[in-house]
Length: 223
Ligand code: SF4
Image (cartoon, rainbow, N blue to C red; front, side, top):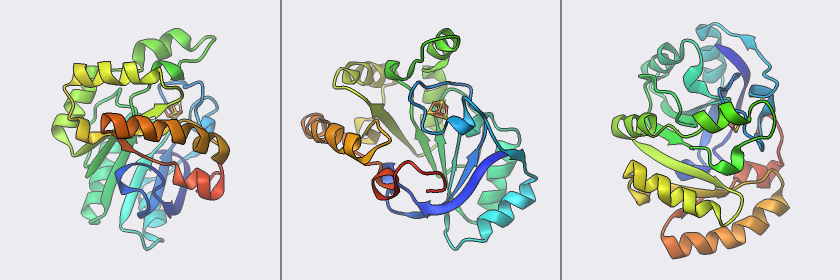
């Protein structure tokens, strides 16, 4: 699998926020979000092909029992199914962070699905391809049927909520699984957006997620 980085940190987002975890970040993505915070896995993918045994050894070098497989888009990584089965065999808790555009029969304990809203669509050559692909309701429904899941939305502006509601209706998703997170890669921006987003969460009953790793360390690789 093409690997951008493997590191030990705490989960900064979603329902497992704060849990010490090893992050396996695959390189390569089928989307091109305008605000992508890991452009070295999408717009300008970096990294080498690692044999699975080397990845397992890197994961097991840390004491964490939780592994977060992220990207890029890990569901398009070659050998992703075999890789996750190997993690399962090692008795590790597996979270997969995906945009939910591709299905693969992976082993997974928490499918963390982050469908990309219209605020993600870039200008330029990638606009039409990104817009066509960014929401795949059939894929999301299969993922939510087959795995424990969370639906995590990145919110840039209050108007994004209309799209969240429409998608939840289409998916017939349980709102108890919905998590809203402010978009931003600077602590000040996250705080400013977090204030109004928290009010929306209070009003609508959605769960709020911080981006704790950005608040603690800034938008740095390896965190
Ligand atoms: S899906 Fe994730 S990795 Fe891919 S472009 Fe969007 S934010 Fe970046």
